[in-house]
Image (cartoon, rainbow, N blue to C red):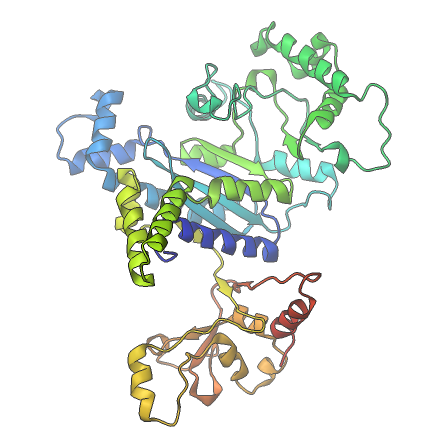
Length: 499
């Protein structure tokens, strides 16, 4: 069921491809989320009104009226979100370098409980500072350059002030979603103020030679934060600076950072934040002004947090549906069904019991992309018994009376062995060949000779060098060097030794 978009195997394959990209490209720089704001986007509502031939004016519609307009045409709502996001991604984020020079990106469209889509994205930024490679000040300066949580002034920037207060300010009464994980607020609002941006690390990452004084204990850290929050709850946050707030609480910025280091469970970044901004979610001003809906932009601090974001948000499989499919598989096995009937039962269970919103159904039915990546992922089977694909049955039957009795399709490795005889291909390895070149079908051959197209030996077709896109990410079976040393070294030779 991997080719069927939206199924658990589909997202599991996406996760494997994404992990291969991270291994080859490194840890992404930014994790971003862009939500829909159907009721705020007047251009969307206006188009829907015109399409429905309504005589009502957009200004006369209240919340209920606008909701009804959207419900009457979820197809156009989904199509317009898809167009809006892809234009925003290509024309604003990538072309204008608003969050840095984006060299690679990945995004997945997910659907909220109310049915509206939102996009989760990973961005790899060229020459971005790396945590634990560059010093903390360089990383913090980079984050401060692109991310803020400040509430703009009403008079200085009324447009951005209205957007931030409308879509970036967390509800002070919280919601049911906040308590989903058994906490008061799983989004950690309100967030503490700080005079500057700093990085908190777990004690194990501060270095084994660091000597902690008697004050650096959990009780000391908890006391610092307790005094801070008690002061926050008893002062007017609108008219006090962070420095004065810390003074009123009887703590210093250094003590606050020390307490954060002691109590943190993972490496994270605390942003510079004024007391009046403790309910504001972080954002990029230029992106927020253009997107005009809720967004979140986070610097990925370590591999662990990156993987957690990927598994929990971007490429998560539908767990409940996974249970349904597993039960269907067991029932098929108990009924002694053959493979074809078993797949019919599993597929039927998925399509009968999968509940989707109207907009998600639109994405699937209209072929809108649920995920996109700037890099293609090429899987290379290696080892003692690499995967082979058989020819179609009708072709095998046609070859029954021929001398060539081969039943296998030509693999990418066969084409690598049949690469052209030229200096460009003399010392190229299998991995580089697969990453830098793609096989052309007969219909893809250019009408005129091209410097990027090469003919393979033994009439195995043509290949073309990537000229407009980056080289593909190479994925391959990963054997343990300790448990399977022979397979580990054999696969390395197959991939990276020019033969």
